[in-house]
Image (cartoon, rainbow, N blue to C red; front, side):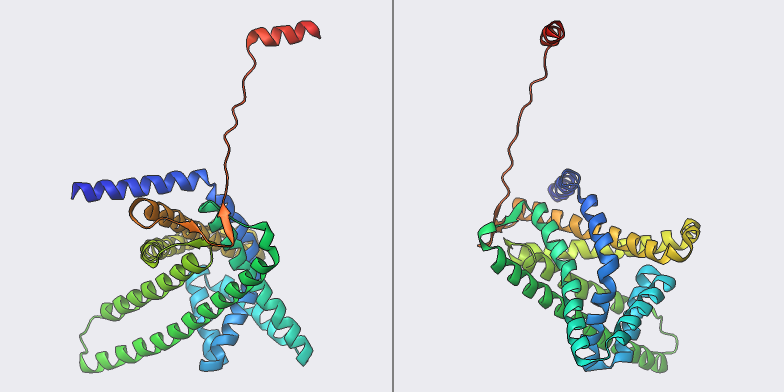
Length: 315
């Protein structure tokens, strides 16, 4: 037991040290700023994908429900309005095609930003000789991740419908049954879906070779931190009256705050995955499109008091 506690302590310690050394909070701020502009595009793409199977109204409702639980009703309504305006702007076929391409590019840009950050956290950089090929590959990967998010949203819709049906049947057959059972099922499914998405991000997005075992453990830890952070952030936002001072811009502040903390948790999970893979896993290696970042330590000699006096005499 003591050995296990020591291992966990060392994992957390090394992760926190790496988190501070890599200045991850700056990367989180950069992603938050970028996401404010790209989030409506990403949400619209996800709704478009999901609506093919489940209907546009159901997809929009599910998206709004998820955003409402994350950033609050006001911010969710503003994002929904931005999605509606973009959706109505495409009247012609050419406009729809061009608009769709722009939306995919904007949505994929979020994952490109995450890719660069995780590469830097893991000490990797793309090879310059394969720049164009790598750019095309990155966009394909980003598009596949957008599809994965759409699939996850679709699964979430189906699961929510099943949970609602199960809850109704249980309430009819067992009137005194506690609703905590359905809440437990809902949380368990959230953990599975989010872990699946984060595992895909850690496994596919960076220019690295890493085992699924290491990725799965890192993704699970990140998911638990994300869900706990979601509860904590929701509590802070609901009790923080200073956000109202921003007026109409308050919803933007909420989105920035949510993405900032969420990306910080994601990058903390990337740091944890790296530390775990090096200590107890199969380590992380660059793939054929990347190489290690070379670091050099340069010592700068401080001039002595005697040298300073000589310089002053010459002047």
